[in-house]
Image 1: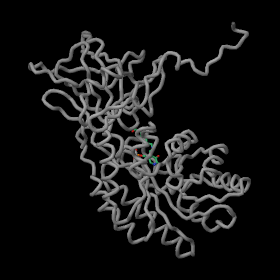
Image 2 (image 1 turned 45 degrees about the vertical axis):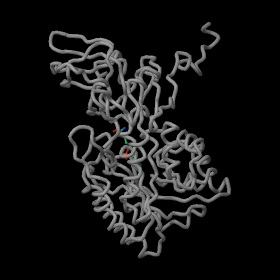
Image 3 (image 1 turned 90 degrees about the vertical axis):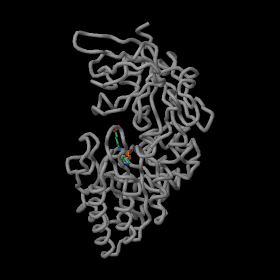
Image 4 (image 1 turned 30 degrees about the vertical axis):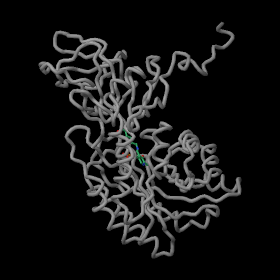
Length: 420
Ligand code: LLP
């Protein structure tokens, strides 16, 4: 579900013509629908309403200030993974009391900043990290709230790059070690270890693996409580899949129906940290067709967007639907195309072997479902300035990030005197 829809043959974002945005902001450009974004936040919030959950939007999926601000304004908390995301979160006025911080490699500086900010939870991924937070709290004379990320050893049945809850992954702490930490929790004098966290992967389309993981942590919580430990919160992570092609992912309501009863029984406060579910279908990437090239065996559409703008197809073989921004009124033959960018790598593509109504130079194409891990994973590879971002809110649209300039590309670089 999203609000990128055709009126006649013209693609709109909310009530704004995509073409008008592309004319003003240039291409390639990421365009976000405020309405789609907020509706997805509300969908998940409402699905779990009976548990009054804290939804912490996963900033790694999209840390653009305007997008995060829109969610924070609607009541969302934030899930962060770095000092940079903490900086951005504080910059948009997020309540630190609604920020949870995960990452297997938090540096002393990042830990210190998060303690000083007074975040809700550190999602801790190892004993050495726990010791580092304890030490820093001692130094700063502060306390910190800790959530232990449990590795439940559940396979999420998703792309192997984005599955995180099995033994081979670097993430989380095994159940025996979690138990051991609780038994020795008095050693951590500055820490309140009162939450368990579990996140098993991303783009998970069925409830089964979530239920399995929640069952496993539920038994762990019962065991820990029977030993007198206090567990007030459970964070069940993110990972809910969305529609890119023909997936039929569980809806927020299905998901809640499967998982909420288990959590209700535990009597814990629930935290969720969805990223893609909220931001994924709220954004598209609009590119201009530079050339249409025929080789002996293939037709190529060469666009001004490339793998540096949207890495998911190259990196994961991910499918993103591609549609024209203006549908031709004359009937055009359907052709099979590779949609590629200007980058000097054969792996630079947005789609392969895609059937599209014939496309002409200068036309605009919209790459759908690009709101999550789109701009967030973009780079300057091939010295390409990163694209602009625009948000449509009702009938208006706003450039929320200027396109980078060539000057931006060299900002911070220095040539040593000896080379001059
Ligand atoms: N919480 C934790 C601890 C995570 O590691 C992640 C994502 C999330 C929440 C949010 O997951 P989501 O709800 O968005 O699935 N770049 C990949 C996805 C990497 C996901 C990393 N962790 C992609 O483009 O598919």
